[in-house]
Length: 126
Image 1: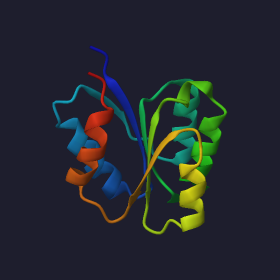
Image 2: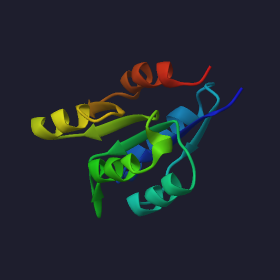
Image 3: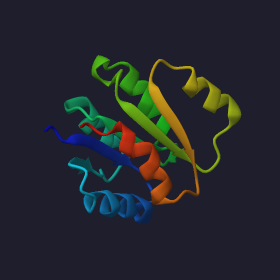
């Protein structure tokens, strides 16, 4: 069975570590990356492939939607699942993102990791 590859791009290190630890302990056959910065995340996305991308919208240096725009240029990400996390996502941006030909789900902060489980578990490889 192939592992589901997940990348967690989040500038709030405590939240990123909580998600990493939470999913590392699951028996879901995952390979998880938690890059230090969005710039490192972009390099990882360019050099590899991830089935699920979990990204914050508002981060220093870039926005999650900018990361998604960069991914649009890479054909291999057309079928990846993107979970965009935001504490304050404007309706217009939400509509723009939902209109893209990508598998994007917007998750509002605050959220519980168990709520994220309900979204993530059906996306895993079986």
